[in-house]
Length: 110
Length: 116
Image (tube, rainbow over all chains, first blue to last red; front, side, top):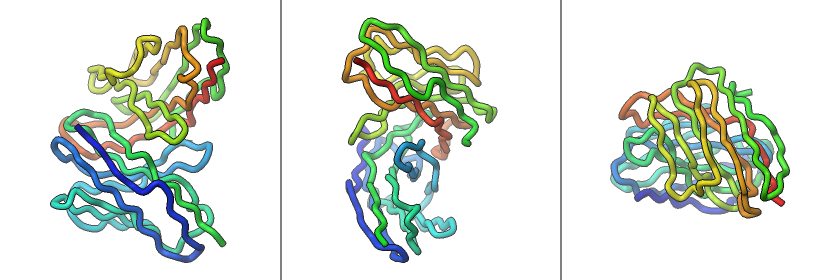
């Protein structure tokens, strides 16, 4: 089966850097994605890693190590608007849907 | 706006009612999904319509019934629901290629359902 583990909560201050980790177990691996969800909003796609290494998109970066079944989302120069829940997600095998982690609640303080 | 719309945004219903949730995507995608999001739980996939096939989560009760008349519209028919079915129901769409892991999902704003 598939399972994803990520911390339930993280707190940081404005301007800081925070890393949200995700470990996964899947039957076959087809990439790791990250989504952001603000309170009352819908999840929005942030990034995808299909291969090992770092993908950078502005202040956000995502890393994958397939040998360790591990990835992380790195948020730099934190802003108050980054306060949200962040989900890692994997496709469960070759099916065309996504399995989401329980989410990490990020709180950015002044 | 993500190009995925859902109606209604809020719904309160009794356990004996029958209602339907509607989703429409304007992105030309070939896959649509229903997810359930309950407080403090992961997003739970309910149903997928993708590349002309339907996939369903076997743990979803039969009181939830999906319908996908075409690639742009998706419905979730609800009947004799239970209070524990109260949750945010999210629709999503994506453009999928067989065997590809990249599957960016575009979510609608959700329907907040309360079952009394």
